Length: 329
Image 1 (cartoon, helix red, strand yellow):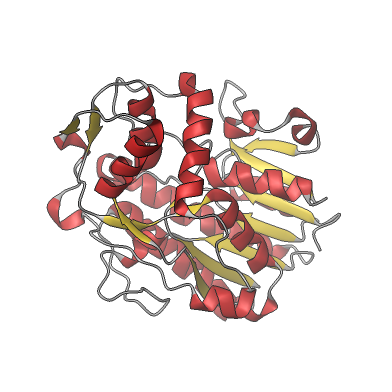
Image 2: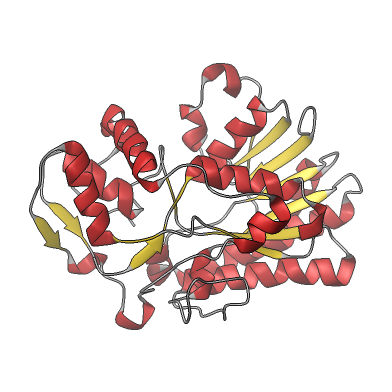
């Protein structure tokens, strides 16, 4: 269904974005991949895609805060996947204005551009499970209250509401997907799983923040499949849909699994600078993916153990990309 589809992906140089672009190209789509402008002409993680695939991508450097640029790129596009955002929670503690401004303004610009482009059939807006805050009940469905425990979470709630308002006000065909914690190859040490793996493979101490929180982890290929399934499902236009595995695991248990796979254990050091402020710590995320199964016929295929093994293998082959001597926010 994606063959020759004209698709725009914002945040294409990021972790999920690069995997999505790769899958779209593999499916025969014509992709405009938007990467944040920089003077180094750096295209982010698209550099790690197979070169034959990369040659087929229309890679465009731009700033999503520039409405005219977004509008010009969106012309003649049929599907928009909006992933572009500043995503680091610790970074949002230090630079809340930048995170809030970027994440809300970029979403507003994408929605305004879509409104002016008659060829746009679908917009998939990527939210985050962080908007729910700590679980008030489990499993967490789409009706779970929103609780902003960080400036990042607040920025994503604001962006979601912008998208929702454009559906209700202008009938823009947008759907909102809320991926729970995604992991896999190419993920940076900003995230906890590659942080644990890269330190373990360097045979150093494991410096980590809080180890008690639990998360619902979904392998990157499953998350990408959810995004594509949503773009093919008209029943979820104007809807919010969770994308998670329905499997809950603590950080402590992840560390134990990594040790088991690599065959040795290392000392674990709790690093205070990696711990969130007390009221900001999201203690538990556990997804109810019933809606995704019912309407999009989607569910995760990769078990956590298999995904973790593939991630460890990839990090081991690309260990030079990880600086284990400093904390990445």
